[in-house]
Image: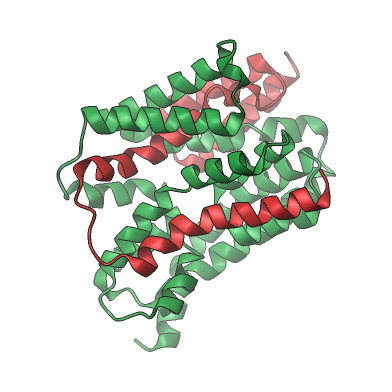
Length: 245
Length: 102
């Protein structure tokens, strides 16, 4: 396949992802409007971050006036999953790709683009990868803008209820694999329990939101990784499938 | 929220998202072998999402009872592996409808 053909093949493959991104970023635009951030800021964040959990948490922390350290650490921990995908890509590619191109590819790494790129195995080329990334990226920007603009038109009752959508997407991601993997079940239950404890218990709830999330997530993960260490490589493939959701 | 706070925060969010994305792909050539760190990276995303969701989902709509019922609906639908878009859309409708009652 020529470079152009690879690019177009990637473009076509990622159309469903682009549509899903439109919907999620739409709720991000709504949330940014609801918290009275300027429109340029919502767009700047979507253009430079291209991620759901990190962006939603980031603007929530900013709304509460979080400090820079809290903001940076919380967003970093939330995004650490990309390090795993980034590792995986570094093992996967067979053709030589220079560092500049690798860096440019990294900018567009998301759960869904990673899943589609993984399907290509060692045949993955930068052209195909950039094809995969193009429409989801544009969808993410467009959805943010439209959500922000409509956030000013929709009645308050709609905008308020839409606040629950992102959390329900998180639930739809972490709940199904809990049924099959004890380690994931423990990580989720412990993460939720510690997070609630830090929210409701006096004094503990003085810890700022970003640090509460980091402490709960890291403590739960250490517990799960200690009690259910993963040994087989074979599970990795299954996991990539799950991440597509 | 003043301008410099927003700009510095935007730059920090960009960096905190970029670093985990590019560092391993650009610089790492060998595999991670430690079972603990492999497991850590494997479980972390799920624990993060759980910690982000609870208890904050309950306060996400401005009506605690409406959000609580919508959350239960989302948990049940996710248990039966309904796709993510449907889970989010139906829970939104539940929260929206019940918002008028509570």
